[in-house]
Length: 232
Picture 1 (cartoon, helix red, strand yellow):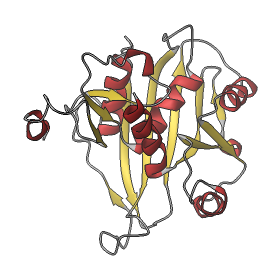
Picture 2 (picture 1 turned 180 degrees about the horizontal axis):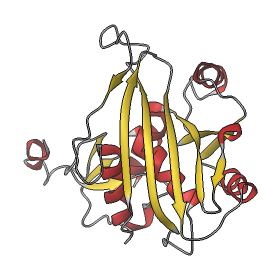
Picture 3 (picture 1 turned 60 degrees about the horizontal axis):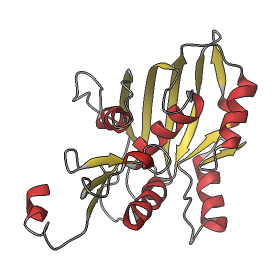
Picture 4 (picture 1 turned 45 degrees about the vertical axis):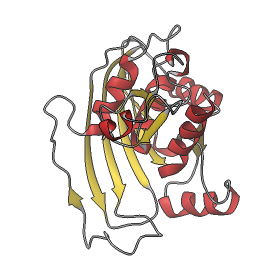
């Protein structure tokens, strides 16, 4: 698809694709790799998908170290995807639909894209993701298991989540309640946070593996990155 736009490259300052448009340009997510965007080189930018935003901000926040260096040894993610958007008439499913592991290394494109996103800041992460589509229209949910190369407490995890202004936390455990709250209090009904972590679901396995559930604000988190990329 990139070839369709290259013919206009001498007349347009920049091109931005959003979602799983792999190979379109430098992968980007607000707050993850802003500092490696180069105005002279990065005419084509791929804003990663909503679930990849979620995975990436969890890795950056929970596994943050010094500078761009993360303390992540391994990350596994289960994307529990909604069937379709509430504005869409088609595409709904009658029952849970299991996704294929089409990528032998990463499972699905969500972990693959997160890997390449962090690669732009010099990180080579061991990531794997799976996906299942559920018969709901509310929100994507995500189960995460992030193993670090150091010990960490639940209190430290919560503190890290609260410090990141792009992370929202909640005591709610139902997608419909989070969706409704965003509809009533969000920007035109949208949640622009990159993730909404459900605090009651957090657990520490051993002393270095952080596990839990969170919700993905669908297009809201990638819209924010698209606006940031446009301003760049």
